[in-house]
Length: 124
Image (spheres, rainbow, N blue to C red):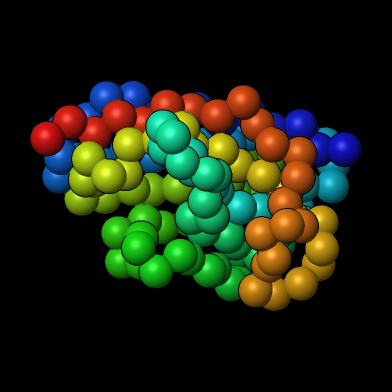
């Protein structure tokens, strides 16, 4: 099973940018769709973005389209989330996960193998 470690979170002012990374262990990383989710205080975890195994297809929740960009480097077993024009409402713990359902667009319920998360805090 793939194990994931997120990094790159931090405190940033509104309008700033951050790039999150998710490093995966396991030889089969490049076979899977990968996704980013986030969980704000007091709220349920929500889907943010996904990228197909080849990187050729991406999928975003409406609220981050044009603001966030998901990418991956299979040679480094890493998936990224570039976040621009950050807003206080983007404050959350961000998680990456592996999608095992082999469907596109991916189903939220097919994501597993969660990392420990990385905190993103956007100040106003």
